[in-house]
Each structure stands twice: as C-alpha cells, then as structure tokens.
Amino acid sequence: GDSVTQTEGQVALSEEDFLTIHCNYSASGYPTLFWYVQYPGEGPQLLFRASRDKEKGSSRGFEATYDKGTTSFHLRKASVQESDSAVYYCALSDRDSNYQLIWGSGTKLIIKP
Amino acid sequence: GPKVLQIPSHQIIDMGQMVTLNCDPVSNHLYFYWYKQILGQQMEFLVNFYNGKVMEKSKLFKDQFSVERPDGSYFTLKIQPTALEDSAVYFCASSPLKTGANTEVFFGKGTRLTVV
Image (cartoon, rainbow over all chains, first blue to last red; front, side, top):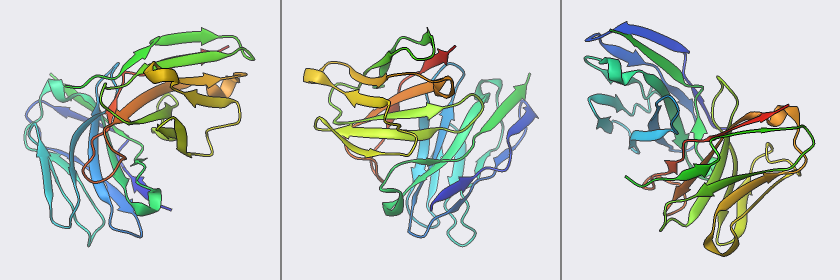
C-alpha cells in the first residue's frame, strides 16, 4: 500500500538557517503530495500541494518540488524564523488510497532564538 | 479562514464509559472526517462521512465507534465502551468535496481524550 517516510523526527536550527525536511513516498499510482504544518495546540493546516512531476509547491517561504524519479517531496526554506517552530507532515493521496490522506510520521522543527 | 470547531478540547473518562466527541464542520462542507493521533505519532484516518452515511473507514474504526450528524447539527464520534488504548487526540476535519488533488481539508484543533 501507499506510504510516506519522513526520516527526521526532529530538526533543531537557529534563526536564519536553511531548512530541509526529507519526504519520500511509495505509491503505485500518481499521487498528489502535500505538506501540512501543525502548530502547538492546533490542527494541521495545509501549506501547499503538488500534483505533477516537477511541479513546485510553495507558501510562506517554504517550497517543495515533486520528483517522481526519486519519489521525493522535500521541504525547504532558505531562512527559518522562530515562528516556524511546529510539526511538519508530508502526506499523499491517490486512487489507491481512495483519496484518503496517507501521512508521514511528522518532523518537529525547533528554532532556537 | 474556514474553521472547524471541536468540543470539548479535553475529556477525561473512565474506561468502559461512553464518550461523545463533537465537531462543528465548516458550514458549506459536505465531507467530514475523524482522525486519531496518539501522542508523538502520526495522524491516522478513522472514517469519513457524506450525505448521512459512512463512506469509508479504517481498521482503527472499531465496532465500538460510531459517527452521525443528525439534522445538520454536530458531527459526532461516539465510543462505547471506551478502552485505555482509545486515549489519543481526535481531529475532526471537513472538506467541500471528497479529498483529492484539488480539495483542501480543514482540521479542527482536536479533542484530547484520556481514558483512565
């Protein structure tokens, strides 16, 4: 079945550092890929999505490019701020998942002031 | 933006008792969902609901679970009887259309259920 793998359980950075959170997926079809952000005490919010190979999603300075060749959708931000501290989830949906969201395990981003 | 409201934010209940979690979805949305998140773990789909019926459910949606939305009021998740392993944060979500490439799902803040 479909799955999403996030290798980093936690990332700790300083303000203005460059961020990469890795996301790899496994799907037999052609999934739509998502990044969600969850702030403390809140539900997940959609950051952005991408549906086609090489499509770039972006929002609030975060971006990720759909790469079918490497089955990846890594999240990047050039300069993080303390307000970016949250848990970031990669997710996918496709016909095989009956269009339900399949979630990665999440990556907690800690930004030290 | 659109808000999904969940009531209560935290519920503590004795094992074996019944609990009802309430959700007020976004007003013009047609699809409703419950997700379960055990502390520190990933979100897991429980069930989705459309037009008064359960459309899909996962293996986590045990026989003790039920959902309904009587007459457009709260969308509820009922657990009867509760078990210790039901302790988790339960997120309600809604979307205008079925999940897919062009549909955004909006989540509530969750209800933290503690079964003791």
